[in-house]
Length: 229
Figure (cartoon, rainbow, N blue to C red):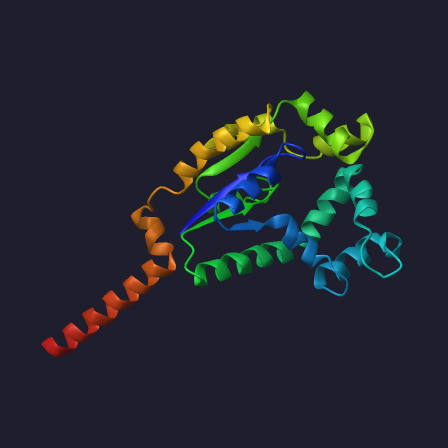
């Protein structure tokens, strides 16, 4: 099984690329969706976060007010690190569970869409690693337009993440998304060819089919050895 790492920065277009993978029939495990689930009312993650940040972050229905929590952590690096530490075990388990379900279905290629791929040290489990890149000014302008936010707020959110120029130094594939959607689609077609190439023997061994072949081989070997005795 091949687990492809997909990352980028806020407003870089990572989600657009993620959706392109889905449209090509390649399953995607979205860490943001997993993180959303682990913060739902009553979950272990919810209890940890409420205990740490107080009930002021809750809405009337007792769900976490995510925009309010976001404003708190993006303006304070210590609180952001605290939030990441609290949720990391739950998110990691959620991601593992989603990958396991896809493995059981027999999927050969899975895309792991995770903004904090390098920060969470999950890059060591993925190959190849894809980084969606835009220049800093384009990233700032797109974020301001998307979220209708002011320059200072947008910069704080961008600076809270690892710079894209640093991420691309650790990437196997870089997708430049500074121009039009049509050009992004053209670049993506080349990436799909790379991602869906035949599995290596090591990747095949990790797939469900590979595990089945290994099991049958061992079973047959045991039968042959038993008869020989």
